[in-house]
Length: 311
Length: 311
Image (cartoon, rainbow over all chains, first blue to last red; front, side, top):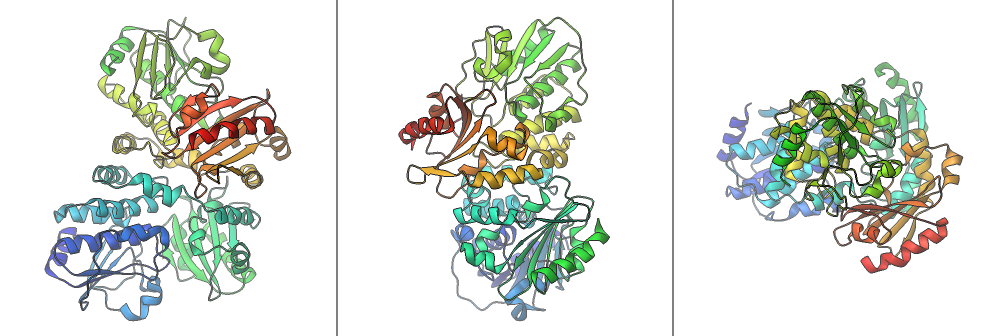
């Protein structure tokens, strides 16, 4: 459906619950809180539903009103499939009224869907939507949108970055987005623990497919030894992909409940989303994810067994 | 002098030598080759003078004609002082006709100077200059300018990034700049040796000023042991500054001729250029450099003795 119809739908309804995906990132949270602020500006009731809010993202709550209401309209932002709802899946399964997303493969079943696969970030779509709706893009909304646009492009480094992306970011800066603060928190700050973790991770690098695939792994044992939390694990996925000659970088993070959360980053020769789909996951051609069961060695062997088909 | 006068000067003269600074980075080289291409497009003779050209930057030579002529006009780009000419200093000292730069403290003595301290990159100034001169900004010129704009802003992460910076980058993408290739080479590729080096460097981190200053160091011994060249040392300066709570990050690289090349990165509370000026160096408020003589321990002690005044 067109962006105009999304705008009409949002104006006509009320009492919104906005769903974000599990293991939340800047784009799903930025989308969620930006949309919440915009709807509240229109006099609507709205809240954001998350699985958790990492402390680095708490600034996104600035200006968001806590409202008490019975939910009637459910909107998902930046969510490619119901599986990605995590602990909220059971509650919201089959209940999504409107899905706004930018993933090429979107499996959400909803009566209203707006998916733009060529948008670098879901927040790009929301920026255009808010313009269309004549929303006053306040500093708080600009901060949310800039967070999404910048994090989903690795601060404009990734291949998904377009001239549109950069122009939207320019507009957001002029609207008051605090890029100095947001870039510092998102891209320029490492805890001492994270540095210790990276040092350990360098020792786990394993290559396959004639060095065109590199795999790193973080086990629960490593996390416990170094005392690092999930917040410190963000951004690791860029490490293996950056190694010279590597076409696919795979990052394995052991989950508390067992098995591994797998992040795949690839260059234009390898479709990460299709690879992850083999394990029930999804994402973009250059950045995708899935979960794989088993011990480290078992899970790694399963990944290695499949990756050869894609290189 | 105004950009209009720079344009007039460039149109009126010929046989250009364009000077870049020693330890060349993307902004000085991007500026140099972009200007060379623009002048050749106007039918002028032009060549770029460098101390060296790291292999990652060789793509900037695309489309540059090798011309034989007697030099008559000397232009410096992105050079804050003659000291930064390195091995070309003796030859060109006092001979610069036009200086185009974006450093707040510029000590070049030249009859014609155009300095814009609020430009994130010198290539931003050249973009506006080329527009003014009706230069056809070809893909090759756009590649050069994008290289300068992106590298001097850490791919739009650093605090110097403005809405103008992002809009110029957007224009350059539309003019054909290959941001996918350039970002990959400049920001997204690490050799295996570089990863080994980073691992070693993590062991050299030293803190002072109640952990508000962090210092890392690379000695010739480390370089020899790991077999890394100067190309692999680029980008290290961001490591100490990124550590949580650190206001000033100092990176010391031992020079082949003895002593240390020092790179300083700071947050808005500390003026890196003023600190480096104490050692005869210079740069920007957030990113500056200098050289310090002596052994590792001596040089480090000299830096630590002064830094307290700035924190």
